[in-house]
Image (cartoon, rainbow, N blue to C red; front, top):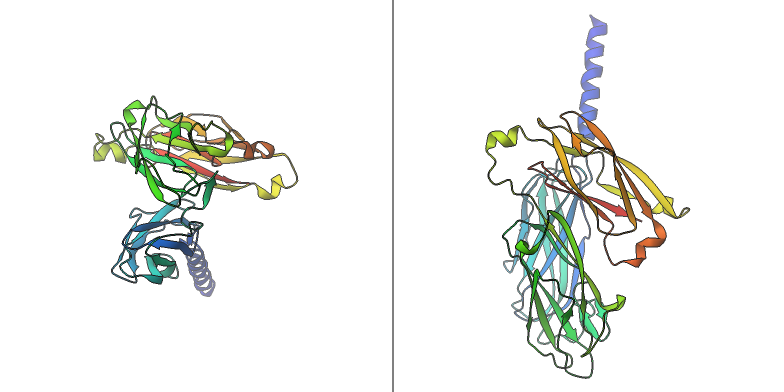
Length: 357
């Protein structure tokens, strides 16, 4: 009897220890964002990428801000282990001068409250563009180097607006060369004088995308009148067209396939420090109730190679995805080291695997 009590106590202690170890963990890509100089009464936005580095789903229960002039939005659905979510804060400056604001994030992780910050200086006219427009293309500065439409459904027309600054000695007209037919460009104003800022708006016509999954192209921002395309003024464009599950019933969703990956983030840096290429296997499993189909397997960068043994998995079945990265090919294209899968799992129609070298 005494032995049984000791065994039960040990089992209880062991289960408690395991439960304590199994928990969500919150990690942000940055703790503080510096806007640099921003114009008075012109709203700015910062996005934080949140990663669940734990082994249980992470739930962001609330996000608060330290003033009434900043508004936060965040990923409301549970973030699976290894997956990412976002927190976005907008700041509409009402007063001149330096500022520092705080965002409070409540979650089911420990500690349950963590803080992120953003700071900057509100001015009448921006003269220092190094923070707000960090990317240099000739004598033009921009606030982005890639245009991405990460989740699009057929019929939608999402838009992305980016900013350009003319630091040349002559008037400048923003022009995007080699614009694909599914993108429409608008610019405001038409011509930028020296030291002035403007915007370029790109609208995607999703009906112009030919197939599900990833469509990639490159546009080229002209640095001056009569400019030509080159690696220096290339801006990669990507759009991911997703399948439509809007007509599925709740019963269909309950009986749907469910994809699970052994990992979604791979760091190759230590292996590539000694070799020109490295490989790793990822286990893909179907934990749902019907066959899982991987209809698309695509890479963003030609330096990445993939090999998948099976594209259809029965319930309970697994397969291996081999990922290979070639070190010397990475820098040849301005594209992320990512892998994209399109599946018939209505909860995860798009699965991304992030790679680091």
